[in-house]
Length: 316
Image (spheres, rainbow, N blue to C red):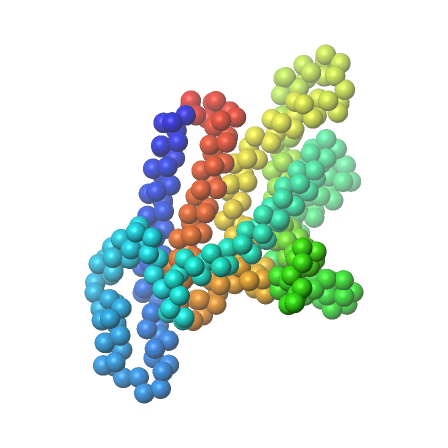
């Protein structure tokens, strides 16, 4: 188990290094560059821009800039925002709770509903429910998340006036119930695509387990269909779903960026777009690295959980 853990850690560190190199290079060489906001200042001259570039270390070769940035990152200094000169880490942590709340809620919803749909579709194969679930999953996967968000706002906020159109809470309220009401629409919209993915994978995994010999043996012993399903089928079908949960993290993060923008949710996705529009590259790079670390840790934990449950993984 320790050897497997060390191997996965080494792979994650190499991947994280590659992500940092690619991200830093793309942002540095992007049109406009870090000095683009300074060019908008009235009376700004080329000499002044060159002086600012020298003060920020942007006049050095790109590899030297990257190594210097990486050294500061490993020391816990993620830089300061160009916009308000605040530490990047403090800015990210200020938006972290909102994103984790939205992602966690949507993930619980997608796993619960997707698992139920997948199991029911597998046990009632080729039924009206199974066909309806398949069509619904294809529709959910074909239509962009922002479209679902705009439709939800139009129906439930503008027409029915049941739910707020955006933000995380009502100014002056901030109670638990107020947070919950504001969370309903963005979490359901974000969960919609993941429900479709989870239900299809769960259906396939359940069908594979149902056809195994040990399930037929359990039926031959006279066990009730419900007991066979809950005790022998569901537990084994959920094993590959643990890996899927880790693989879904990048999708949920990408969907959170869209959902936070549509619903003006004050999370890291909204911060990323705002910082990108302002060319606040230290914050953008910090969000990129934080997201990469978050996804790698999630995948690592999922792999370790699978290895703990299934010895064939860690011994293979």
